[in-house]
Image (tube, rainbow, N blue to C red):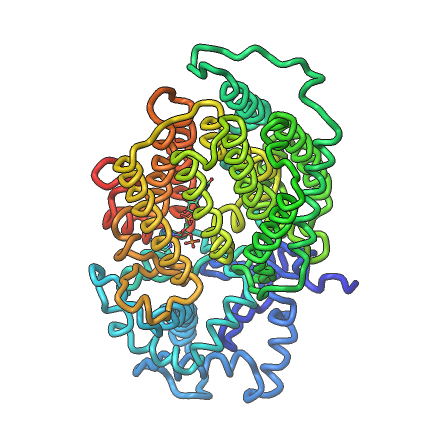
Length: 614
Ligand code: NDP
């Protein structure tokens, strides 16, 4: 492996991204993994540059004296002149006086600012190329006010340059981000160069109550699942009627664990089938994009065929109901083992592959939140697989088992209306998630959270065993729903679903292709990252319209269980807490990502989830 050429502290000449201009910079550090030097320009800008974009000062001066035409510095200054077109500039080749050289220095500084501004403008033009309208509540004079930038932008060939600059260079924040924003806001633009960090830094702000909070959650989450399942089995599941603890040996059965493993690996086989398209995820911090196979719906259809075959051959699906607690224990044990494996392997993962939110250096915290962002065995993405397959499809199978158990236990020729409603609503939700599988690639779970205990337990235990609580409850607590009531609940679910789906699709389509003609009527606030923030449509209604839709649906899933007990409402209560907390986390990340633009968005869209309430 070639060793680094330039030492820390060395003063060298660094190329400015997107140009052929070289400026004096100081090397501040070197990243062995990414092979990038972090250099500091005189104006405080810090960039990560490749070695090929750095030259020693001596070679630079040497070349300059040899041939003026081939000198990069000459070339750069002549370019800077032609770009910034100052009428008072001295002609080429003249010897500079002291004041001229000062002026030259000023020109250089100005060129740096103009170049950086030009890059920002390029990003802006990239955004403006699409049909989507910019938020017209903001000044629109960005490009009109600075013709020199437009000239520069044209010379740099926007498409190629933006792509190249963003992909090849790691633009670190200026010494003072605020200062940068001021520079740009003086020029009446909201764009700044967004830091694209190659190497994620340590997680400084701990969530979920930090180390103590995450430690407690590792015990609290499984305890909650078992409490809910035990309560649901009781004739009187009132909150104060605490269930007796079962004998420990009754919680474990190897056969049940075997069935769980069979289920998990069957889903893994379906995931590996070379059917369905392969898509790219969002760019990672190192600029790379991972590939994902979209075949969740096929897996669901194949699972349906397997379950159909089992039923045809008289397999008693209510085995699941009879051993429900043992299945939950098996899934919990498996998810714990998986989390330990994930943490151990994450210790060997390169720094750049660690999760932005799970790299605190504290064992418990990183174990819980997930240390590695996208753990993969070959092309098998463990997090992506667990997010939508074994747990989510398992939820539908559990619901079906509950429906059959209800018919068997109560000797019914057809399931109750309540059970049909719960099954249908949740079936729709799962099929929708699988139908829109690609949309998960832009969610926080995939882009921000690592894969650790939180998601492993959430995906494999919490989702299938807690989300099916209403169906489980209905088996032991038959509830009659009138047809008019059923109609009202169905309308509620449809309204929730419509908001949820259209909001998610709007954002997902906008993120994937802002130039989508279907989004032409939407307005957005441009941000420093080059991404926009929608301020009309669903995302102009509240800041998390998808959560609103989800919560409305959650209520519709609980209502068929009547009003005798609060237990079946656990889901909607928990879900509101989850989404309020998730929303706060997301707000925090967005504020960090988008700064002022996010604040403007919040001013424009004041409510977070519930219009006029919250
Ligand atoms: P979201 O899909 O809500 O995504 C949030 C991200 O959207 C932000 O980080 C930001 O990311 C982007 N964004 C925010 N505001 C705007 C805007 N105005 N314009 C454009 N982009 C914007 O995140 P979640 O992953 O939390 O939720 C996804 C879905 O999953 C939701 O429907 C939620 O209800 C559901 N969900 C369901 C759960 C369940 O257990 N059933 C649990 C959790 C979520 P960026 O700018 O980087 O693109």
